[in-house]
Length: 392
Image (cartoon, rainbow, N blue to C red):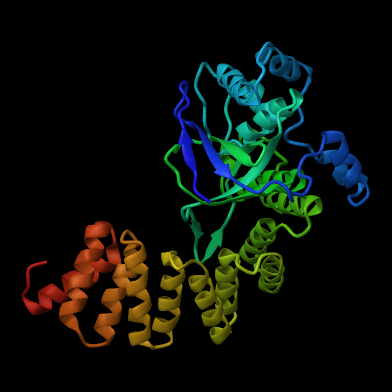
């Protein structure tokens, strides 16, 4: 699936991409806000349903702007551009992008800033109001991983798509217009809503201080769990929310419950490498070393390009005293991410354990070139060069 870029004259941070997809067998993806609520009413308690928002729901003022912006414009291609122009016009002819602002369509319309999903929510609501066949698209970008201790948290990237017969034109509200996609999948509105709540849980869990004044009684830890659970109420097999809920539970000391969530995430998507890595870390924390190694190896095999998985394998083998195996993994980590200073440091540590002082010094020096503030590498290098009368 190869993307072709199309010029967009007003702003560099809105990217229009063309993808050829087979649309003949695509399942229903679009639901009105009323249909969403009616569906969820059959499976979510009323108390939870009252808290739920449909992020692409728009009000009369936004509807009117959408209608006026396409007045006299006939083709869907030009109508799509007109909607994007109207959105940009709300923020002074530019996109005010804030990746920490996970907003609904109405919030981003009035506040004038949001992350990629927030602007996508607004576009979806406005485009559908004027009859444009707009859908949410889950895109896989070139490995963007958030690392937290041994675990990896995944919050995804969602963009908008407009279907023109067999073709899908993507509208990506992004600060990185040169991003590459490894894949793209049209998702239905329920999965999109689940992504919205998953993102909100991620932000409460890691960036609650950026959310503004939420009141003295606001508990971001409780809110994080509530958002992940809301995502799963909306879309029960949503692998990202299952993974993130597992991460949150493990941070709170509930390792067994975390392992259960990782297994559920992998049942939903057996190729979800982040959940495999997290499962491996959880296993290792309770002494199940062989299980941990197996999961990290499967995670590494699934992607091939993620340095952290090889780094984790190296750490496990190093701590088990298997220094040759550890060295192999650390070298693989460095070859995939030359900026991973800890992996370079452990290359040096492995060489020291194997009795190769010269190679160890070389590795510590490379670590300090990568990260001049790496204190462990500096201490080891200073000790070695002093004892060997070498220049650091």
